[in-house]
Image 1: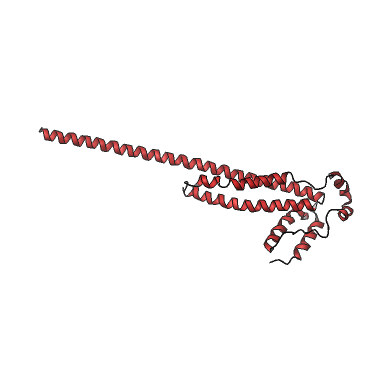
Image 2: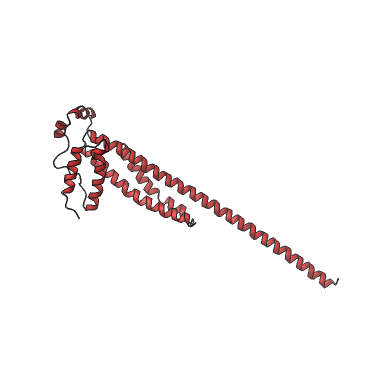
Amino acid sequence: MEPITCVILIIVVIAIAALGEEISARKSNKTYSQNTNFNEIERVGNLFNKYATEYNTLRQQFANQYNVKIAEAQTISDMQMIKELLLYNEDFDKYSVVLKRRLENIRGMLNSRQIEHVESELLSLDEFYSKLQHLLSNISYASSSNDDFSRWFEQEENKEEYTNTSKTSDSFSFFEGCKTKTEADKRYRALAKAFHPDTGCGDENMFNKMKEEYDNLHLS
């Protein structure tokens, strides 16, 4: 075999070997990249699930505390406490709606594999979680403005007489602070849940008074 032919064959063999190594390296890098991408998707997915679970837990805890406190306030006809609870509930709903919408948007990013900004988007929600936790704490510690609870419970058997001497006054408004019909409608739904007789712990007298005031509102 001619020397030149040997040289050419050697060069071809070396080139084929180098090409094989390059192809192998590319496959290895591709596999590594795919594994890394899968791991990142799994990581941010788990982080999202953690935020979503915490949101649902906060909603459930707040709803439970709200129902307990509303029932307590109704029992002693403490309108000031009811008003305070309603304001907490409205604020919680306001932040909850925004947080739910943001979580749904982030879920959409995950479903479409747009994971680059998912973590930063989730971390930006911490402010809303902090507000919900603060409202949960407030409602958990909400109590009657009357220091002597026993006095109220002792008069429960003679509620009609007690109602005439309770803190409820003619100047009290169930819809104080509502400037639009939308705000009044939202307040009405919350009050109806608290006072409607069919709830089991409602107060028909309070419900009728609330409904009468609602029917006489002139808001747009």
